Amino acid sequence: MTKWIEKIESAQTPSQIEEIRIAIFGKKGELTAAFAQMKDAPNEDKPRIAKELNDHKARLNALLNEKKVSLETEALKEAMKAEGIDASLYSPRSQRGATHPVMDTMDRVIEYFTNLNFSVETGPMVEDDFHNFEALNLPKYHPARDMQDTFYFKDEKLLRTHTSPVQIRTMMKTKPPIRMIAPGSVFRRDYDITHTPMFHQVEGLLVDEKGKVSFANLKFILEGFLHHMFGDVEVRFRPSFFPFTEPSAEVDISCIFCAGEGCRVCSKTGWLEVLGCGIVDPNVFDAVGYKDVSGYAFGLGIERFAMLIHQIPDLRSLFEGDIRLLEQFR
Ligand code: DAH
Image (cartoon, rainbow, N blue to C red; front, side, top):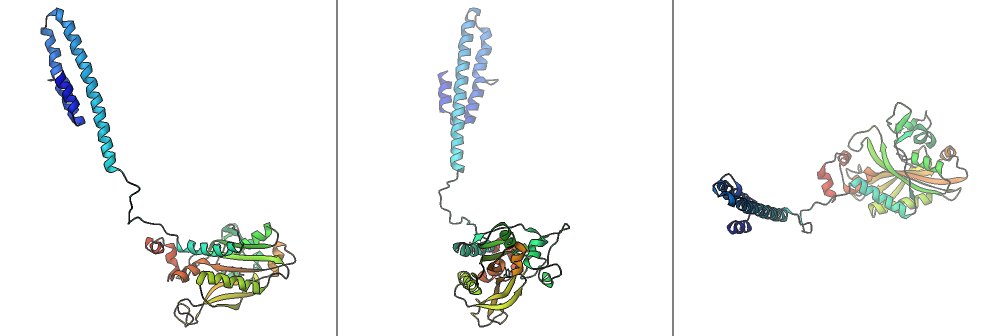
C-alpha cells in the first residue's frame, strides 16, 4: 500500500498515473489479484479482508484522481506559458494603417473651412432633378446640362453629379446668413486616367444680406485656402461660366511641378486649374425663396487635389484598393 502511495506521489505525467492505475486495477493488477485470492481465505476472515481491500481501493482511486488532475492542470499552465503572447513586446515589424489619400485631402479641406466657422452639411447621393439641376439654374433645355454625364434611375431620380444640390437643400431648410461646405461623393458617366464614375467634391456657399458679400471676399477666402493646401503658390482667377453663378471664375494655381516654367502636367501653360467659383446667380436665390441676399459659391474635386499633392499619375489607382498604393501613405 505505501509502495503505491509513494509511486503515485512521485509520478510526473498524467500517462504515468495511467500506468500505475493499470498496475493496481488492471486485469493483471495487484489489487485485482488480491480480490481474486480472497476466495481461498477462511470464511471467517473474508469480511475483514474484503473491507481492507475495499478501503485500499477507495483510497488509491482517490489519490490517483487527485494526482492526475493536478498534473493535468500543471501541464496546461506550462502549455499556456509557452504559447502565450506578450502584448507588451516591441515589434519593429508591426504594421501601421494609413489614411487613404482622398480622405486625407478631404480632411485638410474640411479643416480649413471649419476653422473659419463654415458648417459641414450633407445631402442624399440619390437626388432629384430639381435639386441637382433645376434650382441651380439648369432648366431642362439648358445646354450646360451636357457638361455632366448623368446616371439616371427609372423614376426621375438620379445620382447627384455634383455636391451643389446640398446648397439648395441647406438654403431651403435654414434662413440666411449661411456659411457652409458640403463634402461628399458624386457620380458621372466617365472613366479615363483623370476620371472615375464616382469621385468626391466639396461645395462651398456663403450667403448674407444684400451688398455684404463681394467677389473680393471670395477671392480672399480661396487664396487663403489654396495656400493652406498647396503652400506658396500663385493664384489667378479666370473668367468662366457656371449656370449657378454670375459672374463665374475658374481658379488656377502656378504649376507645383515646374513652378510656372511649363511642363507636361500643366500642358506647358505654367498653371493648373483647381476649382470653380462665382457670385450666386439671382435665379438660384429665387428658386429657394431667398430675398435681399447676396452670396458666393465654389466647388472643387478632391481627387484632383490629391493627385496634385501626392503626384499620382492615374486617378483610377485611387479606387483599385491596391495595398501597395496605400502603403506609401503611412
Ligand atoms: N458644381 C460644379 C461642378 O461640379 C463646381 C462648381 C463650380 C460649384 C462653381 C460652384 C461654383 O458652387 O460656383 O463642376
